[in-house]
Image (cartoon, rainbow, N blue to C red; front, side, top):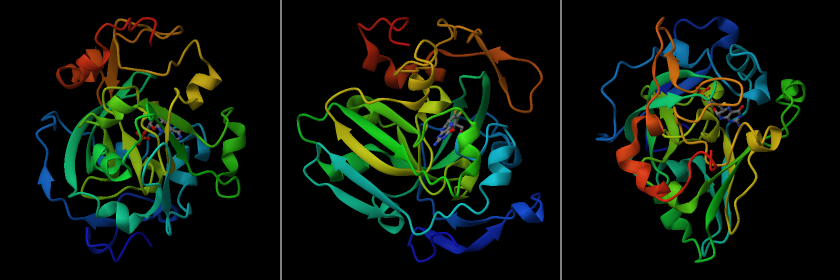
Length: 291
Ligand code: MTE
């Protein structure tokens, strides 16, 4: 199971302790070349919380559903197709993705729009490395992402109220920002299925739903692409979805958040604390209108 054979993977499958036998799932150690200066020194959220409190609506809407229902999700073989306004359209196997750039560990804050947050040591490389290989044409202004969808493997999806496949998007300059991480692992290992195996995005200054899981298609496009939560409730979920304590969700405040495992809430930071790196992307924009 998994991605054995890749140069980036060392060792054999590891079964995490603390999971029940029905949940036992193979993950493999990843060979991380470097730590990142983008990493926070904040306390990391325990692995068991990050893998048992999930949003992955294809596998059910309860926080504990993805860990239970994604165990037999087939993530190998896997291909990611690069399409649209690029000079070099192509398909990548997972082995090829793992060789695009040296893997880095990035410890990021992750803030869900529902007001919970976690700190996760992700593994991956800047998405810009993939963009460089694709060579977008001058017409490419946005990047559209799509999650794998197959109702047979995701029978709970039909009760979730969302349209599938799950889709997300970024402006090309947001996608090129060095913080935007094409993510293949966490806590030293490949991603567990419930966290978006085998490859997902992590966009740490945006609400968690922008960090699309289990990607199969990346399309470079001329216009702002549709996004799943915006389609579902446009007045609640905008295209930009930057973490912003000053713009409340229509049904709740975004001023504070609760770290998983903590009792007291903490203040939510503008751009989730990544303003130094990303605020310039939005200069001159009204972030209340462009929520
Ligand atoms: N990607 C897909 N395909 N389906 C989803 O339901 N949920 C999003 C995002 N990516 C989701 C998704 C939301 S709302 C959040 S908060 C994060 O994944 C959660 O990531 P985690 O479960 O690894 O913490």
